[in-house]
Image (cartoon, rainbow over all chains, first blue to last red):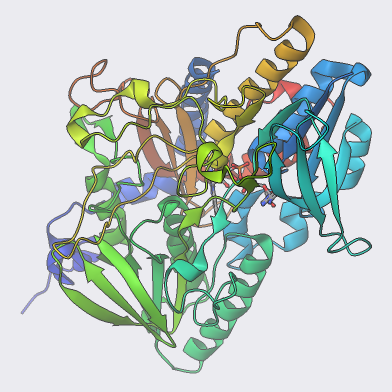
Length: 57
Length: 490
Ligand SMILES: Cc1cc2nc3c(=O)[nH]c(=O)nc-3n(C[C@H](O)[C@H](O)[C@H](O)COP(=O)(O)OP(=O)(O)OC[C@H]3O[C@@H](n4cnc5c(N)ncnc54)[C@H](O)[C@@H]3O)c2cc1C
């Protein structure tokens, strides 16, 4: 039988707890370590944090 | 000339002392009493605990920094406070016991005009049988990352576990909290995902079973009752994101658990439903519960007034509303604003050392009456901000007189930025970068989630790791009082 194995989805089967949550797919995972995208996020997160730090002082 | 004595040279105390010394100049004296010769950037202990940093990377000598700042430094621990003085003098004083090699065990008294208690937590390992050694230190069955030395020990044990896996021996990792009343889940969270990351790098992840054990009633509570964030058009609980990360990394979890006993290779626990169980392990890092460091207080007649100055958990009473009330009646205004002791107005507490009015998460008990809920976190940013506000207040009291306005820094009105590492690496590292605003939810102001979801967010990725790594250098730079240190926010 042909198997359609999607690596990111394997953990759903490992436990009921895992099965009832969300697990990121290939694209979401790749973006987490994509240097260009993460550089943009780095700037965005820093701006957000500076705003929160500013509101807290 | 007035004298400010700061007890504790950690995040809060170091902030208070260094700002006070800068603002007061040489006309007044700032004294720091702290038992360690080194300052430790505690958040990076996580990386020491997996062998990615050394103790030297996360610590530096305090003496030269205090000499540069004009601060009088005693390497000692405070033992007691006499806020009314004694016998023939009304001058308040603290009694200290030296810990430096040359004077170890010697005691001395130091008079003060103002006192800031920033002694942080006592790591109360002995609250759980087997977690401690019975003498107040960590026991032999588990490891810890709470101090740099603990983290070095943890990294050695971790290396041994990796070697065993390389030889084909499966290892079970159990990470989390060692008691039903722990805080600091964030540190354990960072450690378990750093371990997972390192096991992948070492090529032995498939030889490891990993489990989280925690007193949180849901994953992602973090002692703050969780948080809600806007994602993809939804407002979502941190529970969903935490569970997602655990499932993605194949880490099982056991929550609502009070670790009741630790033995060699095994913990005993009680769950919120009252059931009990056991969990075996080969490697366990369990955060101990925190308590006050056990300072005593005496009045002029020498009578013990510790109960007046400190809450039963050993933390110092400040301007919080300590009236016991049910969860439904908790208010943001219960939380302290100035951190001034209500009985002795020249005494303040900053950072973990102040007694919170109550916990933040929903209080929970098992049917057997065992409280199983996280106690409130007072992380680095709030500790630093409180330390600075207290320094401001004391400086104003000294320079403008005792009616000076006190500076305020309520945790119900301040946010916190927190970056939780999930693995170190310039190109493959990840961390959850989070902000919460405010730290203590205010359901009157923000009905629904208790927080402003425009300023409460979280996301995981490499950018978070870069921020965490930069913060490591930035905060050590700041703590060393290098040029421009005052420009770096707490
Ligand atoms: C492993 C770990 C990771 C963490 N990661 C993060 C993070 O990523 N982000 C974050 O915001 N927070 C983090 N935290 C929390 C953060 O470290 C604390 O919020 C912060 O250190 C609290 O500051 P403090 O000054 O109150 O206590 P501490 O920094 O602990 O300082 C207390 C000081 O008092 C001294 N002292 C103790 N007893 C006495 C005595 N009797 N007399 C005089 N001095 C005494 C101690 O030696 C110490 O120097 C982490 C904590 C741990 C354990």
